[in-house]
Image 1 (cartoon, helix red, strand yellow):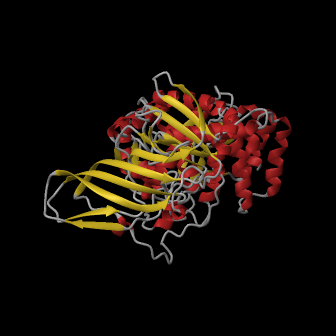
Image 2 (cartoon, helix red, strand yellow):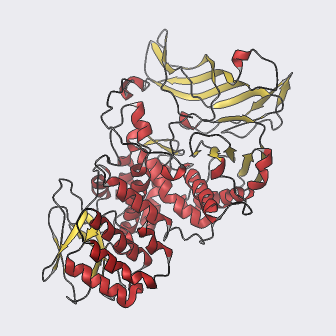
Image 3 (cartoon, helix red, strand yellow):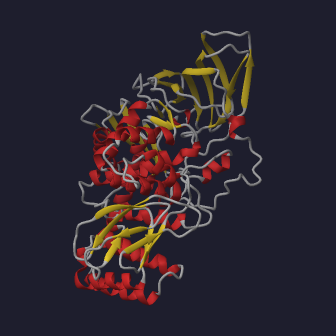
Length: 575
């Protein structure tokens, strides 16, 4: 459900500086299954319009008007909800599909004040108790205190354990007739998959995949999952593809249900990808949450990056995600970032509409691609160590992009930057996250291979991975933002491929002689280049031809080698 911007309630009283409890009774409003700004990416069946980063004619309140003051610190929300669902008990017709709520909020007064400001419309709180019609089951972020519930006439009262400190948009309450299958992880986390009773026989794959992925992420992040249970709900009608509510993830049915008797391998991959994506959010987004929507890509880019790793674990490596699907993210990111309507990964968001529009291919695919490039540059060990330190440092709190890069700077000491000195990740990341677009590197024919940036106003320090002739060794150097790069090639007649293994988020074009040498190498022995490198060559050729940077005759000559192609990753560039 898309959340609504809240009304504000101001309570005025005599100044105090003590811990106290406040009780607020919420009006009956439509029952929500998770309150969120979440919109999923294109692959999860959402459309993408152009983004107006200046707010257009949006007259909605600004961020400054909506943010609560910092003179109060909420410590605990004790919430009771009573739901009104049809066909169970009698109640006034106007109550149908609504709920009543009451919340006690424990606040710490940080400084003397005469008022408390609350969000009071569709109030978002952490649940403690839910009263529902007999015959239904209630679930929320915390595990149930009373498994069977307490009955009160035609009503059943379910109580839940208090959750860890979390962002309010991760709240979820589900009241349903669903049934579940369950198992536990090796660390004792209860794992349940909920569905309509008639779909229960299609939940086993999601259960097995979820448990395996959760266990893997505990090792990958080196941080235990902090909740006692993880529920996943397959919803027949859900506006988003999935939502990462902490401990209670909600999905469209086609993103969670799978039966090999009815569905093909692509459906199986889809379920694995979405499950891996949402579980990644349990750490990146839930354990540590962004300070503001300006850095939304920290949530979604990281979850997209990690989902490919998690899906490989789910499939025991059979899906070969690194070779296949990550190329999709790079391609989607490049294609969308080439548009004039693109935007930087980090950009100012001030209006509600801008939040929804920021859930796009740039945030997801470019975000993941830049992280892939950074990991290739600094090494997997450095990358994982920095991510773990970041998550530990900001657990149960909020962070922004600069916090992440500062941790990387502390960890990364043994990598050379573009000037030969130790790499400053903060400076490198700033270039790639605050500028829209990407570099197009060009080779000019000289005695030495010369690479330069087009002069379009944006500038990056570009890590170049390159491969010479028949030598399968891939070397890395830097193309500085302010000057051309000269590469010393041992054999002037050998081909030279830039962005070998396609680690970098940029395009490459060659002069006629450069393309001729690459074409000849492919015809002689295309396996000199990895499938990822062949993918980069073909993708860059098509991209150059589309903007009249290369004759299509050269592209077709390049593709003649394809009669000997045997693997899919290279062919992913054709469509």
